[in-house]
Length: 151
Image (cartoon, rainbow, N blue to C red; front, side, top):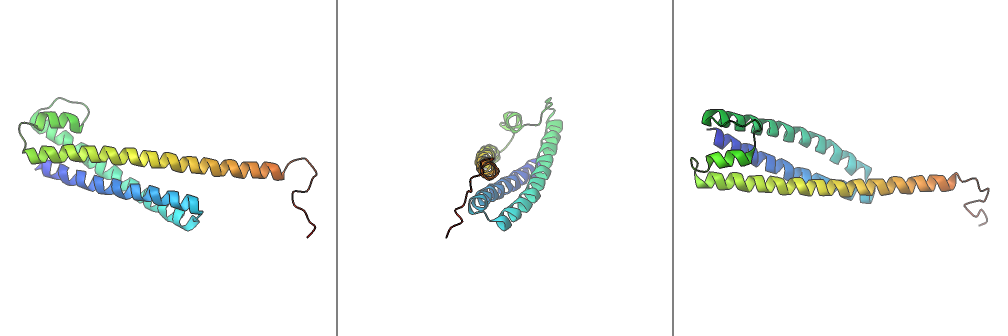
């Protein structure tokens, strides 16, 4: 049944988002610790995971569209909210609760990942600003030496 496939897809999506959140945390640690190897590894893993998330999202949308067609639901956008409204009466309460819970968890992880990415962007911008300021100081036209050569 499509509902079971949808539940499995949502479970995979939650796991993918959980892993992506861990990667964003590791990216932050790599940025703070200036660990280029860890950062490179995180970026590679993130790219693979984003591809997997995209594939699961396509599956989810396709499954919802199939359920819409079987139930003669006339909606243009395949959304879990709309599906839940129509499934409430015809589906086991456990399935409805699972889908509602999965929707909530996916939303929480998505917001947490966005927040973490914003923090990482801030760290990168601060580092770029520091580097630019350092270069400008070193290139300044003042002929004064930045380093005392007398030791």
